[in-house]
Amino acid sequence: MSVHRSTRSTGTPMRPGEHVVVIGFGPVAARFVDDVADLAADGTIRLTVIGGEAEPAYNRVLVGEHAVGRAELATMGLADPEALSRSGVDVLLGTEVTRIDRSRRILRLTDGPTGESRELGYDRLVLATGARPNLPVLRGINPDPDAYEHLPAGVTALRDLRDARAVREVVDRRGRVVVLGGGVLGLEAALAASEVGCPVTVVHHAPWVMTRSLDAAGGVLLGRALADAGVGVVSGTQAREVLLDEDRRFRGLLLDDGREVPGELLLLSIGVTARTELAAGAGLRTARGVVVDHELEADVEQRVFAIGDCAEVLCKDPSCQVCPAREGTGPSGLVGPGWRQAEWLAARVRAELEAVADGGTTVLAPLTEGPAGAVRLKAHQVDLAAAGRVGGVPWEARPDGGSVVQWADGSAGTYAKLVLGPDRTLEGYIVLGLPRSAAGIGLLYDRGEAVPEDPSVLLRLDGPDAGSGESRATPESTLCHCAGVTAGRIADAVTEGARTVEEVSRATRAATGCGGCRSAVRELIEKHAAAAV
Image (cartoon, rainbow, N blue to C red; front, side):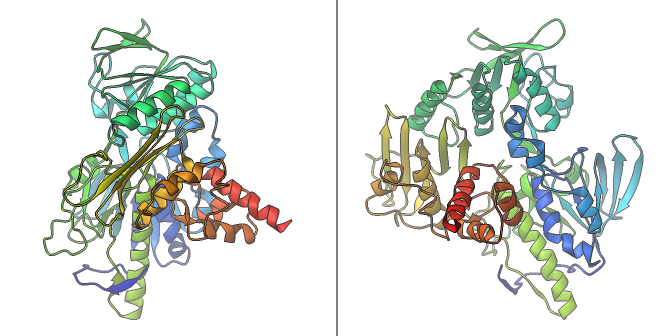
């Protein structure tokens, strides 16, 4: 990361010996802790991370895979508490922060198993509290957001390991599953349950699933692909009531049109809301998240920061040249942007400490937002990627000179739509059933590069004579989009001795996010192994 002399006040820079406390121990918090653990090990800072769950950080994106038996907990871990402890990091698991006293810089903690309360001081605070699942307003369940733990038996949002264990009980006996909500996480869970033999029905209020990411044509073709994979879809209707049996267990979902969808398990997948309660109680500004500027500062003293799904980057300074947009966004649900925030904040901590040691004022260049991350539906039966603006049709001219390229093969279930700006860079895209084309198009989108004059060459990547997409990848090609790891970095790790996906993950962080690149990483390992032989 480049550094420059700051053009704005950065408050009191961090000094050696300060106590940094991280609230939350999910994937984003784990990345920040990992990046500053060496500073705790050499005594430059004190570092404490507080997790509400009894388990250390794990990959939440793979909770659905774990629930159906396709991902083991051992491969989902993102932190080793014992190793962190040896490095001087205090790890408090099963501990809840109930209050932040900013005037005294003290946290009120409650230990889960014992219920005992105590106080903990801090110098700098990093909020990584994530987001909580939204609950629908339906008869039969309590819509209070704080009542998630009191949902009826058989109703879950599949957010943590406890939820995964409840889902596994139904999946093991091949019970009937109902998914409320046609977003990417709900569809991934539906496809995974269907693949292991569960009858599955998705209920979605809009005319087609993944409404925010797809146009009508893409939605229809995705619906057909879901049906081919054994997932039923009921769209264009609202749910009215959660039906319970005499033991208050889920038995079905009643729809507005009077239909009843029977099931033994109801998975709620209707989005998430940032956890802002602690911040609001401490007098910090909140909207759709904890409001921070582009330097992730939540307060004017630059002592409280927020990262990940709990953070809303919203800069109101009209003179700021970094933030062209003045509208914040809520939780993205994507781990990649949160990881980049964690890495930037860790680099800022390091830069401030080095500046103090050198007697200078050098800090990192402010964090800037890149293009909106792609949404990827990862399933063995369906491959979909979408990002950015996807509206418009090819036969309507745009006043700004932009255009739309669209291609579909209904018999094969493949679809591609490219929305091009006046300079032929991608403003958005949808690619269904063409995984290698999706990778190439996604790379152009990420880099802001122009699409070829003949865009059809991108679709030929999935032709029978195109060969392996990974084998033709350049070293600069991004193979893991969540962690931003290139094919060249993975190849270097293999050369240095990594022989499994897990070893590559430890060396590069590739395949530690959504897991969609695991097969590509494995293929690259096998390619280099064959070359060595």
